[in-house]
Structure formats: C-alpha cells, structure tokens
Length: 618
Image 1: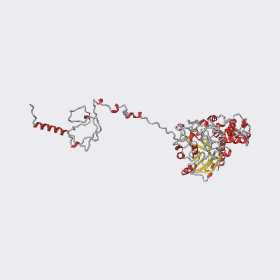
Image 2 (image 1 turned 45 degrees about the horizontal axis):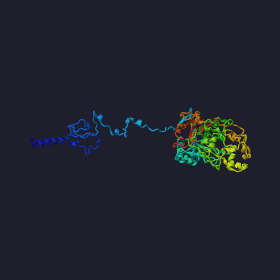
Image 3 (image 1 turned 90 degrees about the vertical axis):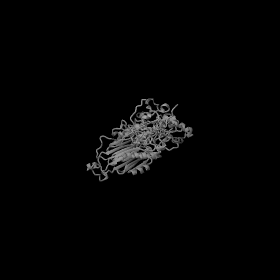
Image 4 (image 1 turned 180 degrees about the vertical axis):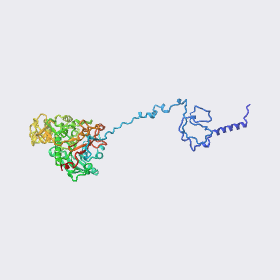
C-alpha cells in the first residue's frame, strides 16, 4: 500500500518550482522597453526552452545565453551585437536555401565576380572633338592676327527637297531648320571667328538677327534664277569695317546661276603691334580682300566650274591691286576634291585643258558613295514643263549624281539612267527623233516643231538633246546663233551624239575665256591653309587637306577650302572631325552637327606690321 505524500512534500515541490520560475524570469533591468525583440530578424532556429534538457546541438545557444552572469546588471547589448565566432561541426549538414532546390532560381553571384556577369554597355566614342593645330614656325608676335571661317550650312529648302534622297535616315526634327539653326549658332560661337564665309544661306534674316547680337555685321547675295539660297559674309564690327563690296552673278557670263562675293575689310585693331600706336589714318591700317564662292555642283560640267573660279580669281586680283596689293583670302565650297584639275588650277596658277576629260575636272566621282536604298526611275526626275533650273535639280545641291541622269526624256527607265551615269551616250539623235515622233509632235519634217519639242524635253543645259545640238555630224560645233533645227544631219545622224569628256569651242570659251585658247592662268599665289600645318590629329590626307568636309548619303570627301595669298601667314587651323567618328552615322546632319558639311577655321596673320611699309617709303 502506497503512502500518500505528506503536505510538507507538496509544499517543498511548489517552493522548488517557484524558485525555478523566479530564476528564469528576467528582471526589470533586462527590460528594453516595449517590443524590445521586435527588431529581431527571422531565424529558422527553434526557440530556447528552459524546461528541455540542455542540447548543445541547438544553434540558439550560439546566439543567446538566457542565464546572464550574476554580476551583469546593466541593459543587455543589442541583438546584432558581435559575438565571437563559433565553429559548429554540424554546420555543413544544414540544408541549403530554397533557391538551390528550385531550378528556376539561381544563387546571386559573389560580389567580387559581378563585373564579369554585367559588362558595361558599349558606348560611342566621343572622338569628334576638334583641337587647334599650330603652324611651326609661327609668325612674330607683333603681327596682327584674325580668324576666318568657311562653312556650308545646308539651306533649309535643299534639306527638305533632298530628304528622300540624301537625308532619309535623319529624323525630321533633327533635319528641321529650327533645330539645326541652334546647333549652327552654337558651333559658330565655339570657334568665335572674326570673319564668317557661309554658303547655302536661305535664312539670312535669322542669321543676321542672331549674329548681330554677337557683334557681327553681314551681307548676303542670293543666287539668280529660281534658287533662293546664296552666299553670306559676316565680320566682327569691333575688328573690321567694310570698304568695298562686290557681288558676281555668273549667269551674266553664261555660267549658270551661282554667285560669289568679294569684300574689302579694313582692320580696326587698337594695337597693330606690341608697343606701337595705331595708325592715325586708314591708309596705314591692314586691309584684306575676302572672297566667298559656292561653285556649281554638277560633276559633268567641268568647264562651268573652271569658268566660275577663273572669273572670281580675276576679280579678286584686280581688287587687290586697287587696294595697294591687299592680301586675299579665298573661302567656299568649291565642289572639287584635293589634287583635282580644278584644285591644281588654284594652287599652281596654270592649267591646260586640252588633254583633260571635261567631266573629270572636279574629281568628285572619286568620293561618291552609293546608298543602300534602291534608286527608282523617277529618282530626282523633273517634269518636262519645269523651268531650266529648279531648287531640286542636280546643279543646286550635291546628290547621287552617278545614279541620276542629267537628262530626262519621255521614255526614261532605269537601264537608261544607269548607262548614262556610267558615261555612255545612250540618247543619240535617232532615239530623240523616235521619241519625238512617237508622242510629242506629229510632223517630223517641221523644223520649228522639232526645235520646240527638243526644248520641252530638256531639263536644262545638261540635257543630252541640248548638248547634242552643239555638234554636227562629225562632232563639230554649230555656229553661234545658228538654229539647231536647221541642221538636217542632227536629225538623221546615227553616230553617238555627245562625248562628255570632249571639249567644244563653246566649252573651251566658258572655261578659259577664249575659244582659241586651251591654257588658263591667274596671277594670285594661293596656298591652302590646312596644307601649311602639320597633321597632329591624323584627320587629313597625304596632301594635308581634311579627309572629309562633306558627308551625306551620296558623298564623303573634301570640297571646302580656305586659301590665302602672299601677305598672310597661317598661324593655326582647326582640326577636322575624324573620319572614323563621322562614320558612326550614315550621314550628316546629326544631333550635334547642324549641316552636312564641316566648318573649316584658320587663324591668319599679316606678314607686315600696319604702317611699316609706309614708314619705310617715307
């Protein structure tokens, strides 16, 4: 029989349980305020239980000790307090996180290896910056200096008319004049030239209003005929004043609707040399003749190009003599490549055209490129009722001339256009007669009607019917003033009608000024400023000229130059944009550059100090 526990036994047991509970109850000194354990993070460790036997495999014992030492009466340290490292022999047996078991989740790479998983994106190199390149040796520091800029800014109406041919890759807002105008003004402010020679200017009022705020004064000459763009010259009013102005209209010489400008500027510099006083009268001040030209584009009309440049050089030389041999600066878009026949005529002062192919005078074919967009038969074609020239004709703006015929007949097709672009004579007189008799006129024996039909078929002086009328059956030229239709062999001739490389007396006269002279000369000793400075940036060709000054879908080469005569010395030039940097885009303009041409800038110095020559004479 079991004995019942006595009351003293129950009392002893309760007292022991109470003592254990009191021993594990945290005192008020350990209370860290409300929710003192709220900041504790998630843990997969089981909670500590004082009623369970001591288990050394419980990971909770490594982080928390429920029995503080008796002498520790202050507030306990935060939960994230650093503890000495503890090596658990069973740590390697723990289960990995859930993403190792799920194939759709991948563990994050180590921090030190993240670079190889996230390579930096390839960025376009910003190597289109332009630096100044100094000439060595430079002029004396006492010489007066000034800066000249030449820039074809791309006329607004030409950008619109040629958008589908040359600028179809450019977003409309970038090709818009307001956007391009801000870029052009910003660029002009960067170079801060004293004299600006601009081509393809059709928004002269916009330029004049904005440049006037920057201290410039300018003049503008619009092209004759239907084109509405022209050339403009601006100069800083604080540096120069205008003494003489002359505008050349080449149509008065039978050389198309292009124009040129000649200005005589006098320096207003307060100090003509270091430590010297400015001359009392304008006779002792430095003067310079500034010339600005935009030469005809058409590569096949070499005689027109030569004639325009010849007349400008003659007028510039005469103006220089009028102002005591003032030095000459010649700027512009010459539509000719370096070391071409036209280029050599300017630099060498002499040219014999007797053995030169007339359609290769400018050398533009060497820099033409062909777009990937297909060319259709009506590409840059015109209606037969159009005028002799129009803003969209090939003469007004460079384009895909090799893919575009310069003549348009009623039976135009892609094959004919291709053969004509290669230089072959396709539309002979017999084909013209056949086209006319098939639909244009009904009476083949009517000379007046035939002449009218030929005139209607042509789109300008470049057309094959027009050029064919200049030749007889043996290639001779019709007499001046003779009616083309009066020549019967012109209708019945079965031989090729026209040789684009040959020269006729009329073409020789247009180039040299005389139909009996095959040699042309000029009296100005000109040097290209860029060829006088060493190429430090690797942006120029073997001749020293920029590799690229014009870049669009149909052309990538050099057409723009700054020439200087005796009496001036090149101090420095602005390095062109590297060709590789330009090729990141299929053609200009871009977000940064507002034209399909590159601005050329040169700093020049007068060789003689103002007033020095006059004092020596006295």
